[in-house]
Image (cartoon, rainbow, N blue to C red; front, top):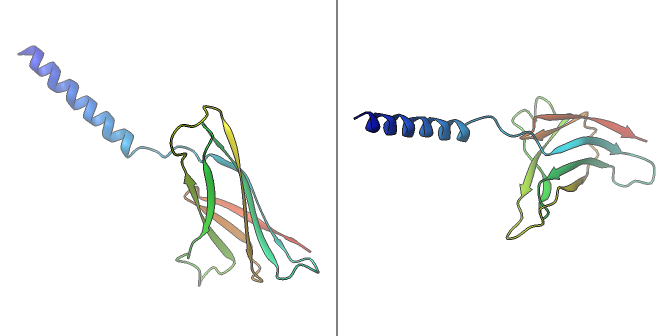
Length: 131
């Protein structure tokens, strides 16, 4: 009888632990050193918004891209440009070495954005104007 209770309690604790891990906190973003600038120098036609960062992954083979997202607040905050960070995991075998992957996003725009927001990281990057 005691053995049956111990097994049931063990299974319950295991199930609770597994569900806590599923819905638990997200791991920190692998990307850091975010920078954004709007290049409006004479001769730059058309002006270009640049966003860069560096991401660190536990193995080789990862790729990262930034995708423009239509923000819900685009009409009320047209000075904010929203991007989504998309990570592509390696397929098959990968070298077990910490790998740094650069991000280099560019979009031609004459809109003078003041801030870039990166989802899902909730990162806010102030846009510098390069003249």
